[in-house]
Length: 218
Image (cartoon, rainbow, N blue to C red):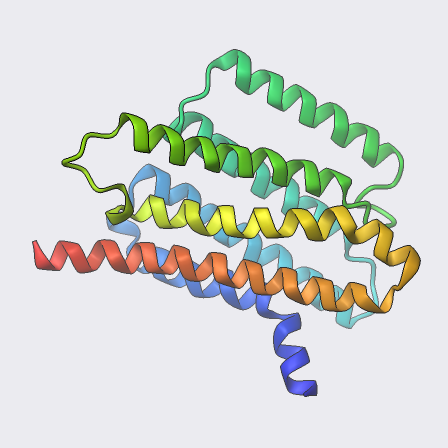
């Protein structure tokens, strides 16, 4: 049981490392969209590994998670805004201004520095989930019948990102309540977060493998 617990605790590093390996192995054939997915996986792997190491050393690791969430959000926002759904500049700047204002306010009150106030992470999740849903809608409406969206690598990456952020939203939004009512459940909740990220990584890995498989057949 202890071994399983330790495995779940580092699953947030194992998953991105797994997906990142597939992506880097195929780096010569990656589109610009998949390059951004690679950066997302590398950010997750590096930051989560550092956070785990700091936790083992009984050191404060909240600042690492803040860097992780912020960097991942900005990479994905650029991915959707410039590569997938092509947001209008006014919409993109409004999202960035809103996010920056919320982040500065929460950081002023200690978010991501001395304690983990998950409100900013929940807001990031809502924005990313909304962009994923808009991606699915726009592709279903605007793509010709000759092109099968589920047969593209980026589709499975977005499915993975949607799965992770949709599930993580409920974790982040309930984190503050649980830490004040029953702190013992927070560790279990975070292991569930790690499982979600691992599932996201599996979807990304499948997208890369699926593309290579079709290329061989063609």
